[in-house]
Image (cartoon, rainbow, N blue to C red; front, side):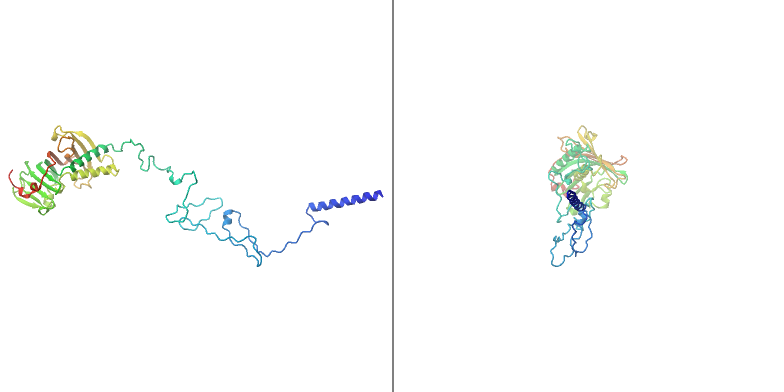
Length: 384
């Protein structure tokens, strides 16, 4: 009896262990659960897309067709327009992990948003370039006490400014002019001339008082007397005392002098000097084009103090100079002198150093009040 009960207990224990084993292994034994049959799908197979987020963004935006009567599990995405580039072209595709292509800053009227740095970060456009020259774009030193590259500039500017100021205050003057120049390859005799000048209207009177051309008179008032020079011939002119009229542009007149009578006075001299100095200061002429020599003396003026400067002349500026040359100018530096600040001595030399032109103004009187009577042709030929 006891033997039968023990056999039944052993049988029950064996059956329970077999059931647990089959379930834990996922196998279907006599007591295992049978898998449910899967329902047949009606959707078309969709190929798998790459897993890169950037590539997914470019995948088709439409889902497979949903069978009639069924609601989609996920609503379809509405198409998103791609942002245009700054030049309006289609955006380039960026490979996963790569760098976006460079896009220029949007032009005026563009709808693309401008670049704005994050809070606390500098704008790269405001940062200095590592390749910029030291001391700014021009390469100039930041030191406010730095001297200009050409040490001549300061005294030259003062010299020219004083001359222009003094000349602006003089309407008319009288002086003795000593002049000689190379004409046709030969130096002319030195002319000694009583010279009178008026700015408005432009008027010139010259009377030759030296040995060369003695007795010759020349009068010119711009716009009057048919705009011609009124001349009384002197020694060396063939017939002395003859009255003639000649245009300043007459070839026979121009061949006797390097300059037209319309260039008389200091306008041309100071204008050329000031213009050349301006080009030198702006860097359009090399240093040394104009040199400041400094205080000096000349025998023509004895002990009177003068200031000297030299400016070069190219053959382009003066075609008569083969290879160019240089003007040396002496400015009156005596404040008590009537010609104070003006260039009273001018000498032109060619590239070989030979003298081409010499002009000296002494016995200067001015400013004067010279009127129409001083430039009337009726005064010509009268004894003095």
